[in-house]
Each structure stands twice: as structure tokens, then as C-alpha cells.
Image (tube, rainbow, N blue to C red; front, side, top):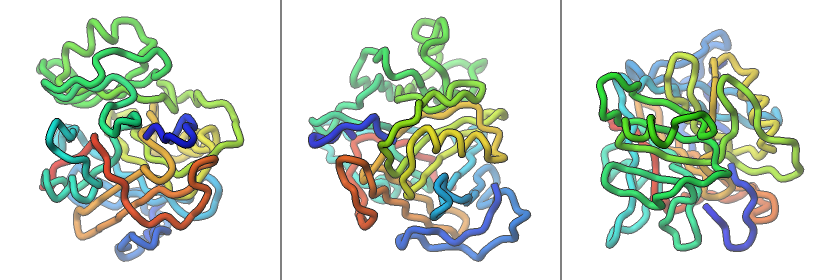
Length: 277
């Protein structure tokens, strides 16, 4: 979200003991387990946060069996928390779709969700775009693209019903694009691995985005690109799948909410989700 007080450019080894008090942990797995299969095509990993304090959650989704979707609040419909979006749209996995403006509705980058487009123009400083719901059988089911690549607007966007533009974290094929800075925050992010899977990433423990990106690139998750979805208190993550429920709520954000005690989901106008089986 674009916060009215301060606007920072806000954002597998399995041992399930989720750091947030709102998480309901599943039985722990051995340290040698890379991913825990929740259902076919959806796997959960929990790894140390970049700072070494706390943990972060990563959900790997095979878009061939579990297509992604965007849910948007339209005129006359209120924004909802990720948990409320999950209940309303029967989703098993929900995360932010990106930052939104002070009006509480307008996505900060280009957003196309089938017939809904708001805003309708690209931002030159938002260098990552996620596309899914292909209109052509030849198009990949999910891609995370760099907008500075040639032909994105003309050749790629016409092939997809959904496109979500956000700030870039990691450029393909694995380049950290954030310089070191003192500001840090809780982070919700979306990534793509070398096999074309979508990675839903949530870390309540704050870090700088430079350190966050470096940490992701060192993990054995084959990450090739990632985009920032939101940071601080609005950063949200909800998972209810395969007997595991995790409610991930962001908290700390430099210059805006410098506390680790936030325990409430924010209402979001746009989210990315996966349909419950």
C-alpha cells in the first residue's frame, strides 16, 4: 500500500514451527525434507528469515494444476482481508497483489484482471509484471517478466487475461536489483522458479530488500525472478491447505510502523489467490 505517512519502496529446508502467533503449525518434518507436499501441485517450505531471527514461508504452486487468479474489489464491493477473500472466493492460498494508492483501490502499477483494468498505463519504475490466465494455448500458464525486455506490452500482454505490474526484486535469471539501504520491513513477494512454478513468499521478520533478495537467491528453491507485493502491516499471507493453516500478518516497517506487535490483517482491494481443491 502507498502509506500516507511514509512511503518506502515497500516489500528449503522444512521445519515447521511458524514464528507468528497467528500460525497453526503442522507437525515438524526432518531437516532433510526440502518441501512438504500439502496436496499434489502445492508444497510448503519454511526457512530461516534473512536476519536469522524467525522464519519465512514459501509455497510452491504448479500453475498447470492450480491456476492463479486475481480477486479485485470493484465499485460497490468492499476490500477484504486475505482470510475474507479466501472464504468468499473459496481459495486455499491468498497473498497481496501489490501496493495500492491512497484512494484504497487503485493498484500502483498496471493491473489487468480480465475486463477490469486499473490503472491502464505502465509505470516505468515498476520493472516486473506477472501474467497468467493465458488467452492462447501456446502461452505459458504463469510467467514473471521483466518489463524492460522488448515486446512486453505489444507481444506478451495480449496473450494473457491477467497482468499485474509491481516493483522488481530479482531480475531474470537471478539478479538482485535492490541496493543496500537502512530501511526494512515485513515482506510479501511473488517469485518464479526455473521450472515455471509460482512461489508465494512471506516473511514477517523485517529485513532490507537487498538482504531479502540475497537470502532468496541462496536458498535451494531455483528462484529466477521475483516481485515485491507489499511490505509492513499490509503484507498478508493466508494458507489453508492439506491440513495446514497459516495466517501471516506483516508488522514492522521503517518510518511507518516500527513495532513487531501488529496482529491484524489489513483489508486489501486486490489479491492473488489459488482455488481450493
